[in-house]
Length: 134
Image (cartoon, rainbow, N blue to C red):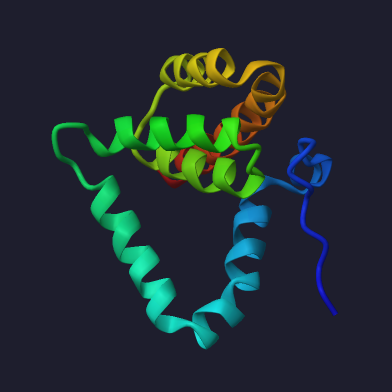
């Protein structure tokens, strides 16, 4: 039996209702069959992600802001969850987040604006988790 995944056309009310931490954990769990069936592909993807996001001319935080903007423009709820989680861990500010989202809206129009609301909710959730860890 397959679990329903939010459609890419509309922001997921399920993600907002159940939380982005739950969403990211669920997606990670649901990808387990891919990791088992195609370990080389999944390892290569992980290596690509680590290499692309490593500090260089751009900081890891700047790269995560870019990734979030792309996730918003692509209407990817899971991307929003994973990248806002990383941004909270990296100490991004709400102002930095909003400026990155403004670029996503500029490039992606109204649909990106709607997904920006999801990104703000996800960031607030993960930032609260970081504060409770401190």
